[in-house]
Image 1: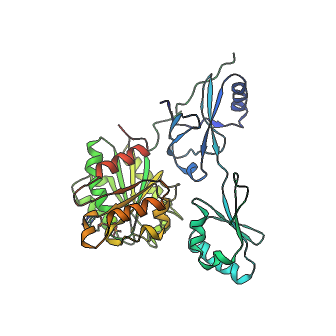
Image 2: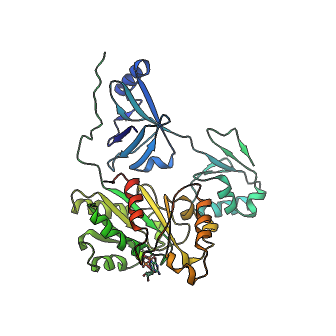
Image 3: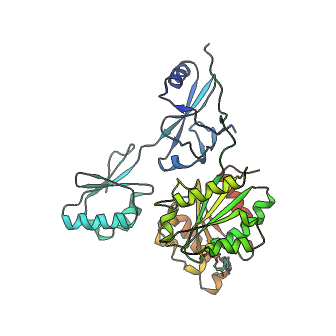
Length: 157
Length: 216
Ligand SMILES: Nc1nc2c(ncn2[C@@H]2O[C@H](COP(=O)(O)OP(=O)(O)OP(=O)(O)O)[C@@H](O)[C@H]2O)c(=O)[nH]1
Ligand SMILES: [Mg+2]
């Protein structure tokens, strides 16, 4: 099985130099994408596999970091570029101040990663939405919610 | 054909040491597992160090330093001074600095193991601090722990169920407990260990070294 070790991020696919080479490879070469979850981009050591089965072993210095568009490898025939899967968010829409207060209390207490959006509370999902809803107890039954994400057509529950 | 520079070589030195975290409730056996891992890692030629976290003491670091298992300069302590999770998740800077210091003291270091202070089931590691982390629970803590779906149990890269020797003494159905653990973790690994006898410690080392690319 093919494997590739990566010890350094070459740059971003948007860097002019790399962008030009990637453009060339898009015509006569192969550009592979390594799909990663947002949370995994914080790791400096990581094993992952591309859609076409290339095993990639990542070992970065601590001052480097993975990101969407990071170019991990490039040669005359091929390149490897990181593609970060869009985040999934649990969108909670409290309809009263007491509900909002209670929701805010729980979200903080559980150390969830959140965003605020005009009266809506968005919780970044790193596990199935049901796990998060279970922690909210009775609030989950009262507060309207749905999941938003790149692959979701809007997973209403 | 245009020329393309081949470069996947780091311009500077070897990659930094891998960093892993060991978390779990008070007394689940985190330090005991590290004491068992030490000789296994040494035998495999891994150049490593340990950073322990305690509330207001250096108890675990002193225990490892006095154990005779490891060069005492390869063990250091961070005093959390508050809830133990604050220094592994919310603000891991003290631990990051301790890891950096270990790398400075021991050139060629390949692995730093961070032991969190004993905490509750919600404790998780920041991936800014570690590349991989495991959560330890023990059989004597109750066979309902996996079903409580704490973030540590759900999200860790590996869940270790320790003290399997105690199952008959505390009336725990170990197979059921492991099955429950596997079912809440969506296919992420679960390992049953006994830090008293060393059961499954070789497998634990295999899993860790594979995950952080230190297999040999
Ligand atoms: N029977 C049995 N006892 C164990 C096992 N692992 C650890 N212990 C005992 O459990 C107690 C706690 O172990 P520690 O290794 O100190 O636990 P810890 O998780 O490091 O504890 P804190 O750092 O204080 O949170 C000690 O008395 C250990 O000897 C095991 O697998 N079986
Ligand atoms: Mg300990």
